[in-house]
Image (cartoon, rainbow, N blue to C red):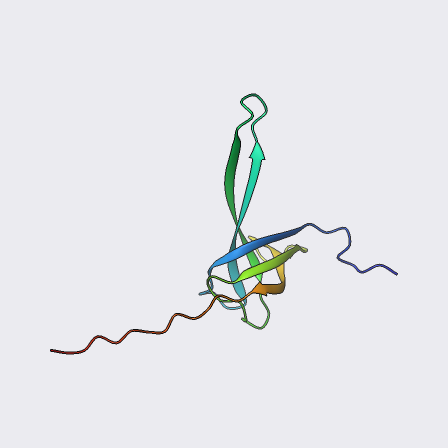
Length: 96
């Protein structure tokens, strides 16, 4: 028996916003070749994705899978976090 995600669209992108509760905004980059000029062009698309445990943070690379409409703009679910972004240590400024 096949899994239920076999025929659903999958995309890999980077989390750009995580301020909402159980929702992240993922930016997906895509390149394609122009029909006439044969030049490679790049486009970016942002998608809102459901993140149940709020585990994805800004900069993480995630795999999102198509789902039923969860809200007005949310139609994707975070399936897994592929790569965690290394946390940048906070730099304290010494008072003079």
